[in-house]
Length: 292
Image 1 (cartoon, rainbow, N blue to C red):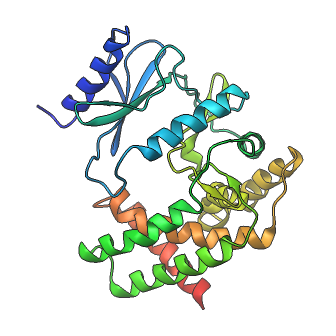
Image 2 (cartoon, one colour):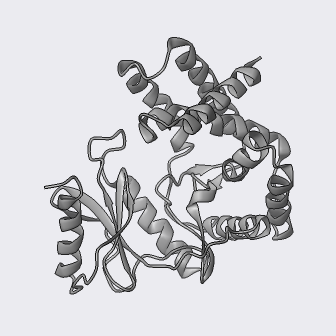
């Protein structure tokens, strides 16, 4: 039995229990989560990494609730599948849910579409009725440092650098106006589809300043790639769509985002290829400069 056989079985059997017989098995993603298309309109998402740092299914339930809220209010998001219970479902020890299949087009979403769709999601998220943990990804990342130390994944110097920036970011960001956020609003979580650009992957949603999501979507363009036209285009579109942000808060969130991404790198990309290793070292050097 291969590593995906059991989670795949969990998805197929759960769908069948609700009257859906899988007629295909197209693997769309195979990592810490398995994403598989089971039918013309049905996609299953199964948590494969059951021993990872994020345990339980509370975060999965939050993702479902947020996706349902956004869909009900017409947000540009990939919806949960309407013909199956939202879950999260548990079968064979795996947590999973079901989404509508969307057809991705070749062209990436434009800067204008990115900023406008993110603003629309933020507008709708302001009315999300359920409580969300405050600055959750920063607090979770701070706790992750012990795991990184015990596994010798970073030097003491890097761990101290990350600890400094995470603590400083928690102090600063906790004083800013906050609301429900995407939590991991990078370009890979905005799919350009035949329905238009749609946001997905709400598992990191938390309560925090909107500048966190803006920092997440512009970090690579502004800091790594020096593509200021793209980064400024996203921010301009966000404002043109009715949003606003504090440039100083955005600067703080850019630092916080770099610290979080750096800490998770060894777990997300074990044995990273040279390009990913270069990007990690760039982030760490940038954080060293910010500390100075």
